[in-house]
Image 1 (spheres, rainbow, N blue to C red):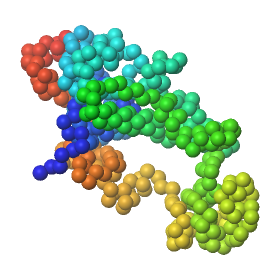
Image 2: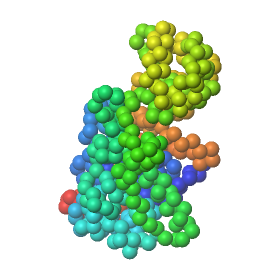
Image 3: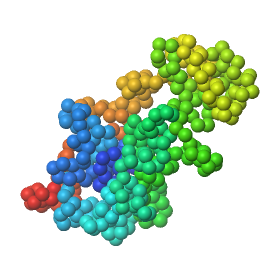
Image 4: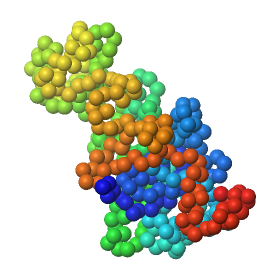
Length: 397
């Protein structure tokens, strides 16, 4: 007998596209929610065409990233009939997720206030670039642009080089997590009040929250945090070092005891120098200390250093490429790479990191083919085959 899932019985209407919104709805689906993804007839979610690469069945890797465990329903929401179908779905849904520009769904009668009148228990979750209010609310939002506007790029990249974006759309993904948290909080609140609410999450707000300790450094000091490459603004030594043979390792030395252990491995006595004895002193004098450590690390190979540092319990690690990371025995053990071969699909995906002991996530279905659930969903609403045939002819579905 299969375990009950945490969100079993929750119905989610997913009007979102691309990455941020769909990452949220995939998380909800993994946890057991029924997710109906609404897409445009003919084209669908833009990321269906964002290839190569693609799997053998034509599923674009990008689309596959955040669309497992969902049904695909194609509806032309510009048509009156399409709008009526979505309203009917919303009347039965627990959650609606959308990432249209602010006000973009109002012309269809699918905004929060309109659907709240249809279903007061509905949790209406909006993910936008800048939020539902404020001087920039109407602007479209893109991860890359928000990484720049938020200050995130100003602290990413080499000290003397250009600002860099993070290698994946980290703001989109972080905002998707924030939206997931908001939705689950709203579900809990509804259990007490019986009422739904509007969940408003923006890329910019999420990116500013991501600044974390670096943003706090500015608030505490009034100084603009510099770009430090692979170094840490508050901890030294906490960065990448080159070793013999041109390989690199990460040293994450978090306290004075660990620093003394590093010095022992390197054969130095820097920990006895008053300039470097405590972390605040090392931060102030990093320009003096780090070159000396760097010279020492270049004397031996990466793996030799890693073995020695691990033996004295100093946090350290190699820098893997993606293939190496996904082949790590720990990653394999934790089922962070999953495939859908048993469902007859060639798609392989990155797994869900949330491990629940009593209500575990499941991987029930691969990313759906465009419109593959249209007939079943609409018949479930009571529409007839004649309705479906007529709507197909009119381009409604």
